[in-house]
Amino acid sequence: MRFALLGSGSEGNALVVEVGQTRILMDCGFSLSETVSRLARLGLVPEQLCGIVVTHEHGDHIGGVARIARKFSLPVFLTHGTLRSQNGAFADLPSVSEINPHLPFAVGEVQVHPYPVPHDASEPVQYVFSDGVKRLGVLTDTGCSTPHIEAMLSGCAALVLECNHDVELLANGDYPYKLKQRVSGRFGHLSNHAAAALLARLDHGKLQHIVAAHLSHKNNTRMLAVSALSAALGCEEGRILVATQDEGLSWREIV
Image 1: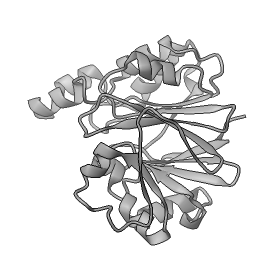
Image 2: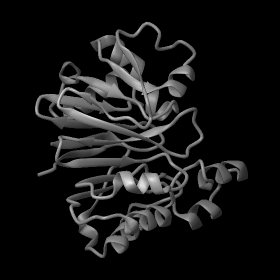
Image 3: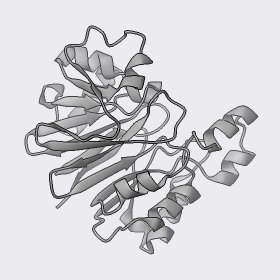
């Protein structure tokens, strides 16, 4: 089992998880040509994908989903609320499946377990992926943690965890007041501090990879995110990986 990120941030998000011959794309916030280019960096072509799972309808996550699904006949999996928010834009796709945000399902060799999160979208979810033994947990685009989120992520072998902003940088930055309130609110995005506090509460005895993701260009720095997560784990800062907007993150094997 392995995973990689095509990119992570407010300008576009996508993650690939692979188990055996099954490869799933989680979200696609890039143009068709950009997605194809970023897949090529990972040694993949779209024809090797087996489907797309969607977290929510914000453009940096869903903007490219319909295009690549239509072009390469990929099945799409998303919640009822997310689908309804698209006003029929997905109606002509070859295969669209509504998922229950609490029930696991399988795509080929990948076990997919969605879970609901508090975010300002219609019916947002995040995902835990598994090969039946090892688990990859992904959490971005949530304003706060919940007991259910922590239960889902506890014991994962790999975590992709939102570190969107530093509280002080956001407060003192040039965002309009309403946007600051939205980002820092219960339905916004996790700060470094909130992500670290969540991480500290998890069982991370099996953790092989920890990735800081969805960092804000204006309201965060790589150093601040890494410092927060390493302190929570009590580990060297070099253990913390960072997924960037432009480069994403190269393949990471879960053994």
